[in-house]
Every structure is written in C-alpha cells, then in structure tokens.
Image (cartoon, rainbow, N blue to C red):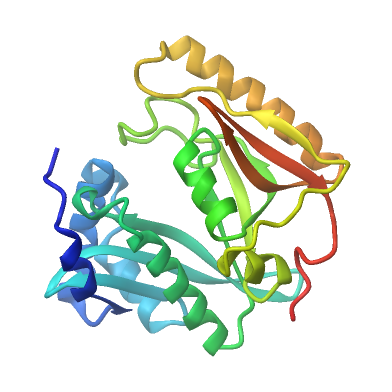
Length: 256
C-alpha cells in the first residue's frame, strides 16, 4: 500500500479543467492506480479530449503537475432535460480519504451551475458502503433506478467477478435537499421510510455469498424503486449499513 500523503500537501492541490493531451494521458495512469484496470478497460486520452472540447467535463486534481484525481462527464439529454452524466470520478490511493473526492464533485457542481445545468447523474456499485455514504450522506444524491450488470464483466479487482450492477443517482444541484446536506444539515426521514441492509461484499466473503447478497439487494431495491420509492439516505449502526428509501417528498428535486 502506498504511504499516505501528508495532510499539509492537500492545500497545494488545485482542481481545474484539464488542458491538453499531456494531461489527458495522465488520466489514463490515474485509472491504473485507482482501480487496477487492464488496458482494455481504460478510458483513453481521446475520450477526455472529446469531453473537454465538446461540452462535457474533464476536470483534474493536480499536486503540482501530477494529476492525482479527476472527473469525467458528458452532456446528456433525457425527456428534454439537459444534464451531465458523470462517467468517472477517480482519486489515486495515497490521496484518498482526505476529502479530495468531495472537492472534485463540488468543482463539477460549480462548473455545471456556471453553464446553467442544474443536475448531474452517475452510477455506482450499491455494494460499496463507502461510496453509498459519500453519495447520500455527504452529497445529497437520490437513487432513482437500478441497472443490473451495466458494464458487463471488467478486469478491475474491485468488482471481484460479480455482475456490474449499478444504482443511478441524481444530484439535483440546487434542490433544498442537496443544499441542506452540503451545509451539514441531516434531513429527517419521512414516516413511511423503509431500510434495506447492505450485504457485506469484501474480498474475505466467499464469492457465492457475495453473489447471493448482490442478488437479494438487487431484487429488494428494484421492487421498491418500481413501487415509487427513492433511495434518499444511508445509515450505519455498528457493523450494519442500510439504505433508506422514501416515497417522493418535497425538497428532493425542486430548486431554490
């Protein structure tokens, strides 16, 4: 494991749009370090160039000239509503757990709002507890749709050979819900809320148990989402973590 970077170095990290092919190529290396991808699964430098030059987002986090993280997004249109689809956000291991991921997401938000875009969406693995906490408790995202095996089998050891199930998250940038969460307010859950425990998916759990847990979580989330619930929160008690789901309520999507 790479040694942690001293906290004092964080203040020197700049977050800005990528500039030119040399930086687009650095984004390939970030993927190798962050996720252990083989070459076949790496998003190439040309994709970052397309995003940067044709209305998307290619935002890098730099410690000096070295890229240590990034966000890659593309413009998207659904039912007449323009938004960004955030395809990837990565931070290399020795810079993780220091708030850099949130700084990158906030840079995405600032850039989107400056261009008149009020929503960013992305997907994540619903078995990943740290990502669940980040998306719902720290950013104020809302889970709206379950996508089974979205990417097929990948070379990343993080996926452990499981189907790449993903939960689609909407980040409604100026909704009251997001403004509350970003300001440190914990929104109260409604009386009709339900919880679903997240199964353990660490590498020490046998594959068949992880596969069974993923299947059960998939079935429960799909059933509730199809019944009009949204994933609005994450809760951890002891060694158990759960998703909180509620029916649509005021403040989740309305902008202020």
